[in-house]
Length: 72
Image (cartoon, rainbow, N blue to C red):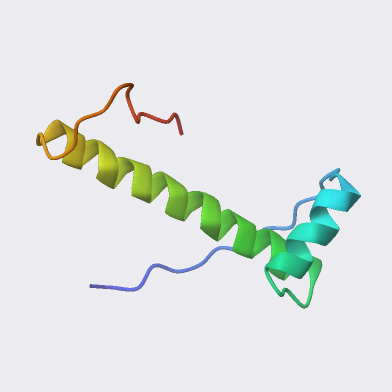
């Protein structure tokens, strides 16, 4: 499988400083950019997990009380 080229772009954001500092410490990130990148990795991973769970439910592998479906 061919590797996808990573495209980096500069972004300016207004962030909650308390959340940012906590995320940076929790993720053991050296820089703010590394913290944001790691946090985005976690968001993408979460979406992949929910997608996988949806497939398991659709195949009849789990019984649910309410749908697992997440948007995004």
